Length: 154
Image (cartoon, rainbow, N blue to C red; front, side, top):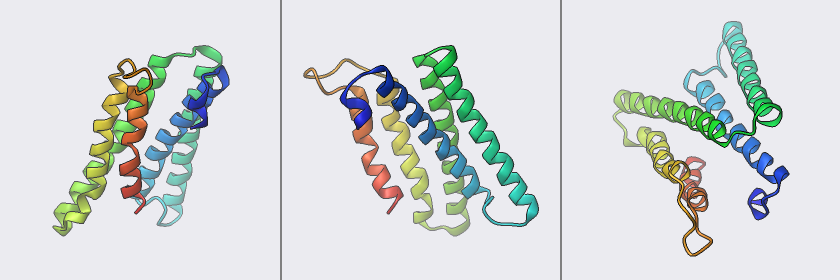
């Protein structure tokens, strides 16, 4: 919220960096949960360490590119959309697999939630001018993420 109260260079950078961290952490956690990297012996712990290092490296590279090479809105949006779609597809696959194994509808909830996120993501991707001078696609994107977040953490 603070990032959107005033549009300064610092708040814009913090918004981009926080969004990138949030989306990449989603991918990080998704792989850990789906492939149970949090359980197992030495080999799985080594895989988890490598995955952690890879994700940290990707984030550092992303921030470095934006901060010191080229402040590029299109690149930032594309990077976040690609990472977001990848982890949403992973959750969808996982949900479908668990539903097929168990036959229980609740197993599909992660898939439903990420489908919801992907629908409201279109507001962020297909930007439009503000309605009534204040209600824009970005604000509706944030509003659209409230429901799935509440369900996800329920």
